[in-house]
Amino acid sequence: MTVRTLLRAGQVISMDPDIGDLPQGDVLIEDGRIEAVAPRIDADAEVLDMTGRIVIPGFVDTHRHTWEASIRGVAPDATLDDYFVDILDTFAPLYTPQDVYAANLAGALECLNAGITTLVDWSHINNTPAHPDAAIQALTESGIRAQYAYGSANTSLADYWFESKIAIPGDDVRRIRTKYFASDTGLLTMALATRGPGFCVNDVVTAEWALARDLDIPITVHVAMGRMAGRFGMVRQLHDLGLLGPDTTYIHCCYLHEDEWRMVADSGGTVSIAPQVETQMGHGWPPVTAALEHGLRPSLSIDVVTTVPGDMFTQIRAAFGAERARLNADCWQANMPVPDTMLTARQMLEIATRNGAHVAGLEDRTGSLTPGKRADVVAIDATALNIAPVHDAAAAVTLSADVSNVDTVIVDGVIRKRDGRLTADVARARRLVEESRDRLLAAKAAP
Image (cartoon, rainbow, N blue to C red; front, top):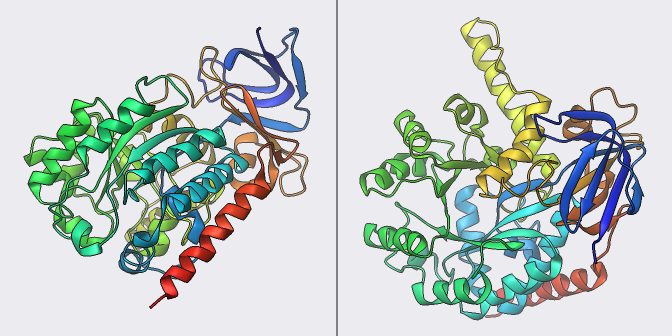
């Protein structure tokens, strides 16, 4: 039986250059697929009144350690160095599969509540084979579109993050690929979350890259976050090992050298930037403009809710404000006018939607309201006092809206948030993640 949903009379920002913006328009969804976007559509369908709503593609978060939802806010003042000790060497070894399940469920629902319809779950908490199963189960139950990025265990900072000789277990990665991701067309897909050079010896680096490519899954890796990591020349090392390719996403990139930017661009690699974490924790300036100048399409990500908020509105404004502040200061110091290439509010919406889908390898199915793509759609309540009156719809979303304005969220045609309320069992998710918090704190305090 065909299922149709018609979003009626919203202000549509399609992010599709051929469709553009519709001051008032309809979006027809059929069996999870966007069937049509037009000023007026008449169809036999369930009608959702979008009057007073701005209708956009769902946000795409291209890098989040979702397992950390149980310890939200425990490191508000942390630097990157603090994070390694306070989180990876203190809490991570204590995580059970039940903790991972609780955190991934709550974290994925948090994403949906905030209008994030696609998530790259950078899951470096695979302390036992049961841990990835728990993470994937939670993602599946949440209903989010996600790329599950299988990462290393984190039972010892010394063993896993300082010239580590321990590779991600290939047998278990293959098990997960076979059990859950035999097809690459589902709501959940798979990647490999690698630590990379500087953190691992070269034999481990080459083994993990070979594993991902043997399984035909993309690779995601942190590079050049902070001056120390910048000195590693991680991208240059990967280049020297012959490992660069279009299947790899480079996260942060704050201290990439000029030749490394060219290497990423020339190899077809992609970039994920976490601006609030980067400015707050000392990774460096969010390099959105640098990525654009090198012909790349940067995306945005949250990274860790131990230290920053988990919504895309925060990331948009952090990147927009930081990059414009940096360029303004540089131009003032040099006594020259600001360039015409300063970031715009409209660009930030594209970066948070289409670019995110591109980086996650999913642009053929999400990132814009394009007929034929899957229906990942968000409606923002523009009648709220923090948004109304609307003069520029894109600016209203990027610079005025917040999580409270996310009225409707649809993923793959399924309504996950309606009239400002998630359709999931939020009370259960909150109970589970609070129980996980209590258990982890008790374990941390134990002698």
